[in-house]
Image (spheres, helix red, strand yellow):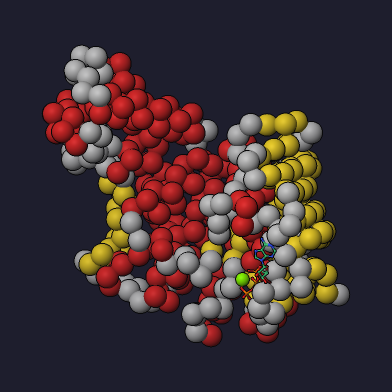
Length: 359
Ligand SMILES: Nc1ncnc2c1ncn2[C@@H]1O[C@H](COP(=O)(O)OP(=O)(O)OP(=O)(O)O)[C@@H](O)[C@H]1O
Ligand SMILES: [Mg+2]
């Protein structure tokens, strides 16, 4: 997929912005505080129904306004689909191809997005939640059965936890245990298969982008290895009861990253973490394209930050070879050194919340 048209109203300092992006590179250039990240934030809102910068949408809506809106036309496999997101402080309205829809997950199906920001190292450095999100992005897009099972899992987990807190007997919880076991079984199988398929691509990208040797990536299901979840759950009922929640399961899954035998977070520098995280994301984009023929839109905020010239060059080249729609922000156009080599590219200049195409 690629965005062929974008209209943004009242997202931070962007008042009324319209552009027709290129299907290849879109270079967004402007001074600090001009509105570059806000433009990426608007695209993210269109694909995810939420911001990547603020949990509270009030901070994203332009000061003094009641609502923000983002409209976009997505071209996919020769068809065009209109997407719209309108966010008020208390409610969200989503429109896809003229129909109102309830769930933001439908947006993601029409506009698969990946994001690389100066915070990208968190994927490597911070807790397992970040890596679960990473993994699940891929499983969600590759396997249609993932999302309904994931919802089923969330519901069963919530119910079981409520039961544990109320001190219900094992027998009274039987139905929720069964539901949980079944959903966890599907999620675990899909995640495992996905990571298995992704690994060769990830290793290749890591080798190209980083100078790291001996990077190991392993999937951990979230409970004692080698044990069936049903058996594990039965054994841990008592301790779960004491804790008042389900201590292990798919909610504790991890994608463990080790470099030369040590946890990657301990072993590699900040710049390397960024490249490692970027390599992992590029591999997902490539995998989705190969497995399902789906193109991802990639948003890259402040790419040059913290990367030296040679690594930046390598990263830009990898972006170009991805052959997907990319939005890259930078304070200077010259930082994107391979711009002329893209077969399809446009440059936009952002100034005080206005965006103009440079010709
Ligand atoms: N809710 C809001 N309403 C209006 N303006 C806002 C709102 N939230 C943030 N801003 C302002 O929007 C402007 C653009 O911010 P943005 O983060 O997009 O800039 P940027 O071009 O990415 O800058 P940098 O190069 O420093 O990353 C800033 O001046 C910021 O203070
Ligand atoms: Mg910015």
